[in-house]
Image (cartoon, rainbow, N blue to C red; front, side, top):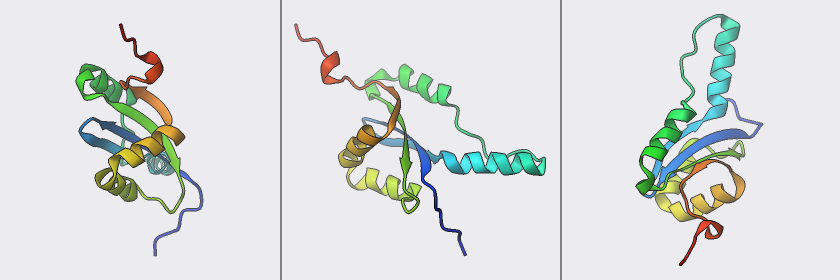
Length: 116
């Protein structure tokens, strides 16, 4: 029987003009690292290197990368978020922009635009 989550969990989402490129549950990574440290073993998973994700985004500005973290309720899984990106990408992107924490974005915001 799978244990039901009671606390919100944090997701890392990376997308560009072509759709969702990378997603992971950071809370699960943190738990695995903590349990491995308590057992005295090496962690079985590695947290994604944020600097490498940002470097990839900076090296491909034509793709308009956005990198966000967002906290979601316990009943929302990573697969649910991935399905939302497939079914209605603009809706989920707007929701993540409104409620998430922006780590990196190539997106041009209305205030940043200069029209001559």
